[in-house]
Image: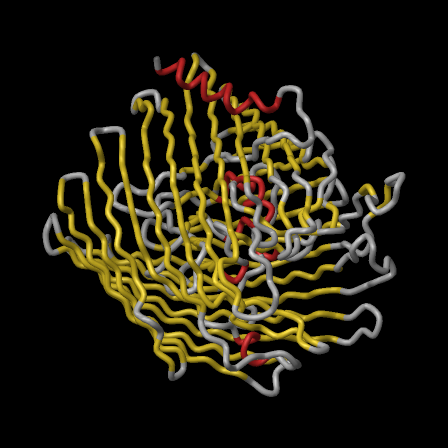
Length: 633
């Protein structure tokens, strides 16, 4: 019965791939991911290792999330800005944390995922809804956690990764790992360049001629240094630093001026010191860090520069205590100080942000718990409303689990919302949201001995966001207003599994999301009550992996339904489906000191012409070859 259920799941994954029609619902890439919630958590979390993202040649976090998850990634063409839309919310409703530091801009309220290389972290945790509320407010849709972790058992080695791909894409990554069982040092240097001169169909012309993307070159370089010192078996001190520089040309839209030579440069530096101590009944974690970033727009015509700069000093203390097997608590305080400068501000702007939270967990049964969390924040001299969450989970037998949560969250306006000149609105109110989530997880089968398993999870969600902030036309400029009340509702279904047949192992993953996001009340302007712009109703992603000894063949595909680009729902982007195919070998060469692995990937194998944003084409079929060499020391 185990094999029959697994084979049926694989047929469900591959069924839509036969006789493919361009407007038919398809599947997306998903590889080594775990989407089910942790055993003692009530919220949904997805975990992906950075190695699985880098193996097939994806270089930035935006590209990787688009290929490996069911989240909608809004990208401005081949090398433009990339942001996320969780559960119908906007880009500013997503938080991005690097080793417990919020690396999003306090000016824009978001992080550009196209500037984050996948080698900047060891593990990616995707937290849906209010799962990151203990880290801070503002993530009305969800959050990303990018973490580096110590491995004191790892050996000393040098690693060299080299990738070459279509459109003159090249990437080099050099890593040096040194240390003992008490001290570890990890050093990375990376360089990435691409011309991005791909051909595309000009859909604005009747005969759809092929043209070449102009002014689309991209260059990135950076360095990462992590130190870990084990004071004792229960005490670890770490210091992590990351420098990143991106210089990219900004291609015009296909209906714009092809002679435009605009550029965008991003410089960022992040560093954090952290102390972690564990005891039998308690855990203490303290960290202090700095995030500094410059965003420089260079006008291709006048060569004038517009520099937007911020510095953020962030401090956190968390203490967890277990009273008994039934009751445990965690509390924390944080302080953040932001300084921002822009030619569009009248002067330097600052913000003080303090917060305190406390959570309690009560295990009312052997396999069930009740969680309560409360949070209060002070921004400058304004207190936030009391926010928090309450949730419960209960295992049913050995295979099933139910979970339910309700939460209140809010998002304070960004510095640009308040101070941008012209257009800033100092009278803005914070956005406030109520969130409801319920889920059911089921393990169809599981074998510890063979690692065969198949699991499925279903999650329903409902979010009500009041005083939604939106920039609207006002005279000769735009200004942010508390425009409307927005209702988001939907369902997410995921399944993943693996089954061994002799020397073969077949793995699968599929996710489906339905999102209905609409305006239920309008406070100003004449905004319509339709589906919110850039929120697809349907998104399906899936993947199959076939392994034989050291060889692995991966197929992935994603489908995004059509979505509107205007509030009136009178203009829309058509649906699209994109598929990728990869062949990997783990040990092309393997000896005591030397190891070489490789991967060959075909992206968009059906050469499907598509755009995520209007008049900004994405690449057609393209290729990459990646080699990873490791020398033991």
